[in-house]
Image (cartoon, rainbow, N blue to C red):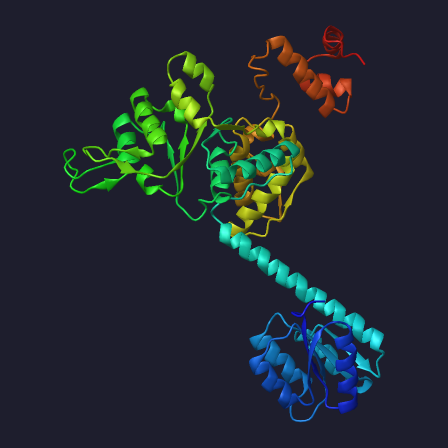
Length: 452
């Protein structure tokens, strides 16, 4: 044990006090002894202890008063009562008031050592939990990526490795996979964590508005510009600027942002003096950026500037193990926000979610769980609380594989395989679900080599 494990022993029998102090010091605890209740209260006025071991029956101030003192000023301190057989009922009452445990006299030192050790362990765990809560609160609203998928965990390892390097990063992936969340994750794992983080969707503004948002303007730069306005690049200096959907940026704006990245300086609209800006750029797109370059929609030199490191965030359909994990995470989140006692997800719901391809990815799953919590009247999300199209799921969402859209025949084969699996390989039931007779199903199974 280390020197921070502090213990107060309160006992009005001098010999018993001396023996207990000696025994507990041998265990490695930092021990203070008090030979009366009033002395113990004076000590507690100035010192905090992890564990207090106190006699229950004492003159003037008893163990119950010491317990009350600790509860009021040191709520994390664990109090253990020592009592004779005649006052066991009082010790039990003290436990109801918050005492950790009680020891009956005469006791064996091994029993005392065991209970004291367990009390110290409880204090240690409470301290660790408090530290974890503090860390979570510090980053609450900043970034939290929840995953148990091996590939996603590797991706996070890579993100943590490149975060301190200050290089520009390009994030690729479908809409809803969490590209902005990953950008924040990189920011808060970098040396810029204390600096600002700003995000802008490059496809959500006209060219003029986007230019104004990024670069700002000088007073009088245009009609209505009554005051100077700083742009996001200037405000993000010392931090990170996230350029979402960068491929949607107009070509003329691409030239301006390229200069800001290369030279680390820019001009406000209507300005003549260059302004320095120390910004890390993280960009993202859900489009084929190489195809956009070939079509002349995106500048290759800008691509090279933002693509120092490229990270691909996989769709939720490729990390199925995360579906139950994320479902319960969102369940807890929205149950807390809505102050509802919803803590379970029915197996049928999990089954449907696991067999759904989530074209909207994590964002869609979050919306489904938010809806489920809002509609649930019990302690569980049931199938009836899911969106209608998901409840009546009979046609799966098929994704491009290796850039190729599957043919109707490939979709039919995949769909039949899925229905068979859902039907437990029961061909009669599968035929009913498919809306065909058993002979037609047999022919299709033979066609696709699925007879076995």
